[in-house]
Image (cartoon, rainbow, N blue to C red; front, side, top):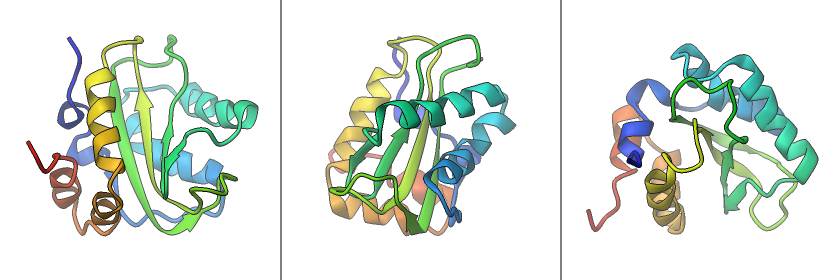
Length: 152
């Protein structure tokens, strides 16, 4: 059974107005809730950064939006997602979509349990207005309400 976006990103998994000087730091900031809730081990955060070091900034999926992730392995205890808004932005090296102002972290236990959530996320980040609404959210509740597609 695939989990929805609302099931994976909870209020305590939203970091608002984070500040990061580097893309690596932005991933660490966005991953903090996953560490705090014990969804992932510290090694997973390092692996998300290693993926970008190895393959480049392909995780920058749309203007201002990155989705950090790594292959499922034993460092993920449960499928979850977190998000951080970075109003100042950070450069990932993706000329078409930098600066990144919204970083999502996906921790997947397997290759399928998160697919429904990813489809919903793609629908949201396709719309610049939706991305701006998420970045401007004043509370975790407001952020989460921005994750509900307009046609839902």
